[in-house]
Amino acid sequence: MIGQYFPGTSDRTPWRIAFLSQVPFLFAGPLAVIVGYQPSWGAGQFPSLASIFLIITAVSICLGFILGILHKFPRWAYLYMGYGLILLIVLTGNLVNRIAWDFPYAGLLPLAVAALAILFTALLPAFRPFYAHIRQDWTLLSYALYAFTLLILSVQDHDEAPRLTLLVLLPSLIGLLGALAHLRLASAVQRVFALLLSMLLAALIYSLPLFNSMGGSVDGFLLALNVLLILWLALAALIIAPMLIGLFSHPNKSTTA
Image (cartoon, rainbow, N blue to C red; front, side, top):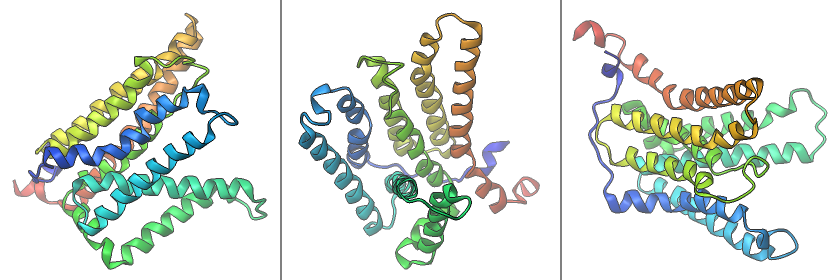
C-alpha cells in the first residue's frame, strides 16, 4: 500500500554518465580513506601531496555542481547538491569555532545559514528545475540527502581501526554502489530500497571495529549496538523523510484507487 506514495517515474541514468558522476565521490570516499592512512602524507612530511588531493576533490565536486545546474538538474546532480549543503554547514561551523561569538545559540548558526541558503536558492531562476523535479519525484531529495551517508562512511576512527584493511574500505565502497544502483534502477521503490539497504549494510560494517574494541563486555556490546542503531535511525530518516512530499502531494490517492 505504501508504494502508492512513490512517484511513477521510470528514468534511468545511462551507465557512462552514472559512472562519471560517481568519480568525485570516489576521491571524497574510498581514496580519501586510503589517503588518511598514509603516514607519509602527514603534516610536515609531504603536505603538498595532501593539498593537491584536496584541491582535485574540491574542484571535481564543484565541477559536477556547476554541470548539474547547467543541465537543469538531472538525477545524478542531486548528490552534488547534498554535498554542497554539507560543505556550507562545515565551513560555517569552522567559522563559528574560530570566532568568539557573544550571542546565545551561536552553535546553531551553521544550520541557520543552510536554511537561508535553501530559501535563497528557491528564489533563483537557475534552481527552479531543482525544486520542480523534487515536487514530481521526492526520491531525488532522498538521493541528495544520501550525501550525508557517503560523508560519514568516508571517515574512519583510527583508534578503532588502526590499520588500513578491506574492512575499512568496504563501507565507503558499498555506499557508492548504493548511489550507482539508485541511478540505474527505474523503479522509485527500488531506488529508495537500494539506498536504505546499502546504508544499513555499510553502517554495520563501519561499526564492526567498535564492536571488536568492546572485547566481549555485555555493557560494551550494548553501547556499540546503541551507537549503530542511532546511526541507522538518523541516516534512514534522511532517506525516508522526503516521502512526506509524496504523502502531501497525493492526499486522496488511496480513496480514488
